[in-house]
Image (cartoon, rainbow, N blue to C red):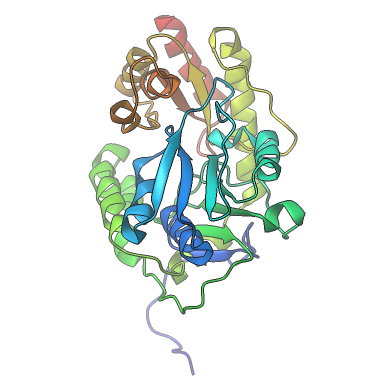
Length: 324
């Protein structure tokens, strides 16, 4: 019999996860590790424009990888030719490449689709012909206030029982932001990133699963879409990327690609608009004239998430207008 009475736990609503049919894991990098172990690939082609955490499972499993460049459409710059025991990984950048992600899954016989920036893309995945040959994984914490968590769709299952992760000790950055400030919680956020590196492949924690079940996914997606359109209407002419949003697209951020974007990023930070940088490690991997290097340097990823409304977006626009 479960314990009855005593002190209360967190008040969490119980509902349905958006990816209720997926395999629940503890982080995006471990979802990738699951795929690599299950498929037994010998080599994977990965884009230069990606977080360096993607390399962790390759190094841990001793699997080789080869980088490829992307073009200005954020798609592979060359036709890749993987062998039968090799795969190609593609990132659905900022959740804005849904249509190409579909094309990608058809283009290569062994494909891995990184949807960590595209939580709403392909929601409720039910293994149609494309998805059966396209292993797909998502991250929870890039879109929502949770400490960890990932979802994986694959029809190749590992023949081993995974331990279940625990997240209660990784909640400090979330609770500190509520009680204090984003600045005071940032060190804890960075510490959480480091801890996740050594956790290993596990099932999603009960805490994260419960938190994900309490999210109003529709309301949060509507906020993101509206905020994106407000920014795009004001900044489209000066943005070197011209974004066309397909039906059902729910972006991660508003990617604003401009000359001297690094200067603008710091101006926004000075005004307490904290723009994530994707990804500083690219500056070490690429040359200064490579597109990926330029994106890592000058692409400003403006927050558009569910915490903010039109007034906040207009405040960001006014700061940018003063710079450009």
